[in-house]
Length: 197
Ligand SMILES: C[S@@+](CC[C@H](N)C(=O)[O-])C[C@H]1O[C@@H](n2cnc3c(N)ncnc32)[C@H](O)[C@@H]1O
Image (cartoon, rainbow, N blue to C red; front, side, top):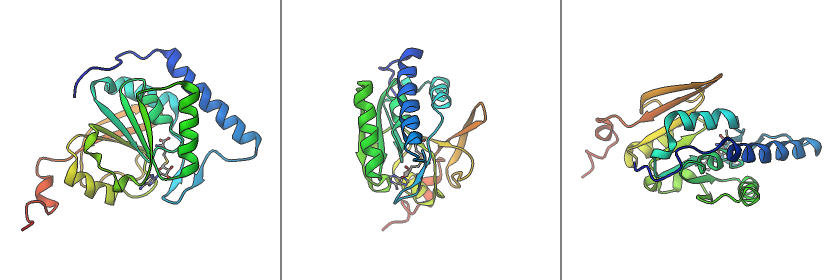
């Protein structure tokens, strides 16, 4: 961790993002399109902007070097994170990645990129804090993290909690619960790393 970023993003910069997403959802609604859908990899639902902003202020996201949202949907979480530090969104659905890039341009956000891809295939070692709003059990992601990631994973909601990572902290913002998980010191032992050849 190194604190080189924005410790106090303004409410104004957050509101700009929030308003863009409100307008986007209103446009979808006018067209009779839901702001959730099945994707090839799971199900897209958006986090609540204000809860995500408060979460990042609570944990001091600016202390981290590079944030990634695994399954970034329409890009909202990654965009809010970019107010604090360098941020990446990884999403498999083309349309959602395009939408994320459009809103990024509208806002004029820098410090931010979107990758169209499968986060299970990406090298996650470039990041020092990860976020996931799971739409499926986290078994494969956990296996990957146990092998190659030592830092914090924020898990939104309690429907699919990690089973093998260790819970360090819980942050509750209104009705939203965010668990912060990390590899236990013995975890590498049980992933097969110790037993290989
Ligand atoms: C519940 S949505 C969360 C969206 C966003 N993180 C948020 O909180 O607003 C989950 C997203 O993860 C994506 N997803 C699921 N598995 C994925 C994978 N293996 N690689 C990339 N995207 C994935 C889905 O397409 C969906 O858009």
